[in-house]
Image (cartoon, rainbow, N blue to C red; front, side, top):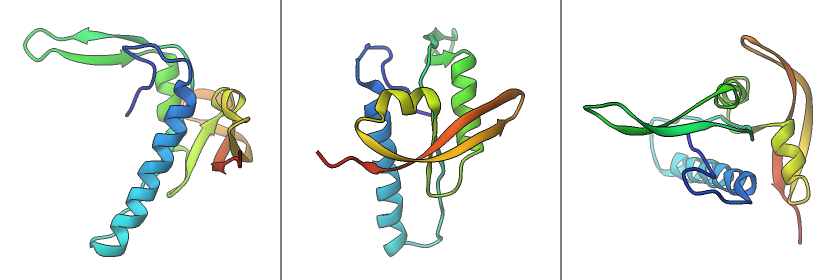
Length: 125
C-alpha cells in the first residue's frame, strides 16, 4: 500500500499515485524479461480522506485508517493483473492528464458497487 498526500499534503496526489502505479507496472514488465519465476501485479487507486498517525508503543509505525483506505484495497482486489483499476473519484481528478477505459460498475466486498476505470496511458500534452 502507498499513500500520497500524507503526512505532507500535496495538491496533485492523485496524479502522483497514477504515475507511480505506471512506474511499478513498467518495472515489473522489465523485470520479467530477465528473471524467473514470473509474477504479476494488480493495482487499485482511490482518492479520499484518511485518518493517519503513528500507532503502537513498542513498535511505533505510521499507519492509515478509514473507509477510503478500505475502498482502495477493494479496488486493488477487484482489479486485473497488469492493470491499474481506478475509482471514479480518482478518475474525476485526473481525467485531464490520463486516458482511461471505463469498466462500468464493479462489485466491492462489503461495499456498494462503484464505477471503475482502467488507466490506459498519459494524455499527449
